[in-house]
Length: 215
Image (cartoon, helix red, strand yellow):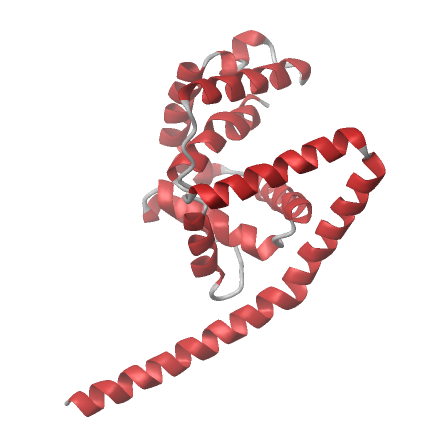
């Protein structure tokens, strides 16, 4: 449970800053970590095992955690990867992007923070449509822009307020988002992948023709 708490606190902050380019003020990081300390308390984690006792302690724990990650990946049981799959599917249905997109995003995250030899155990079971890695990388980079961050923050704030004021409408929105997620996995991403492969093929042909002409 302490490891899960670390993933949702320190690891999430690190990914938002290092992968997505979010600028999170030091005080805001402390507030977020304190919130997760409270979550850990309500989950029954004793304070001596709560990694969120301070921002500095979380960062130190995360550093140790990442150093141990390659060994943990190599010795993980199948249940670990089943849990990861379940978490991804649950998250994708809540944000509407589809499983494939989150698999591609996680692939980028692991290959970014770990050397290739150490990340292979984590990424070998991540299956996603061709071209989604490039799309996910582009969208993650787009999150670095303040305008995109503002839209994202306002959307999250809207959902938070809706959850408190109108639960029926909130549930309806969540069902719609879940339907969009399924549509993306069954229609959007396969079509995008086919288009990406076709365009890549055409580009290769044009490159070959151009090379031949130049000779």
